[in-house]
Length: 139
Image 1 (cartoon, helix red, strand yellow):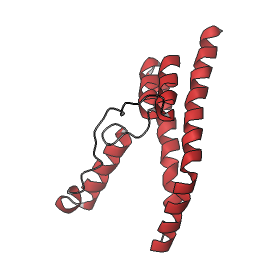
Image 2 (cartoon, rainbow, N blue to C red):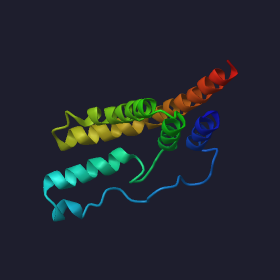
Image 3 (spheres, rainbow, N blue to C red):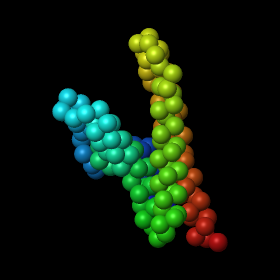
C-alpha cells in the first residue's frame, strides 16, 4: 500500500506524465431525454458513485480501490470506500444553496481560485497515507 499511495501522490503531483486510465466521458447526456428523471438520476449517481465509470481525475480513486482490496476485509474495505466517497461527496455541499445564475458564477470563481490549494491538500493527504503505511510496516 505504501507504493500505491506514493504512486498516486506522485501521479497527482504531475511526476507521472501518463494519463490516468479509464473512460474519457462523463455520464451520457442523451439519457436525460430518453429516460424518466429517476432513471437518469439513478444512473447518474451509480456511475459517479462507482468512481471509475466516468472520467477519473485523481489517482486517489485508484489508490482507494487498492486500499479497500488490500485490506482483505469486507468491513475495512467498505469503511475505506465509504469514508473516501463521503469526503468526495462533501464537495456537493458547496453548491447546495445556489439559486441564481450569479451565485453559480461566484461559486465557479471561488472553486477556480481554491483549486490549487485543494490539489495540494489531496496530494499531501496521499503522501501522508504512504508515510503512515510505511510507519506501520516498520513497527
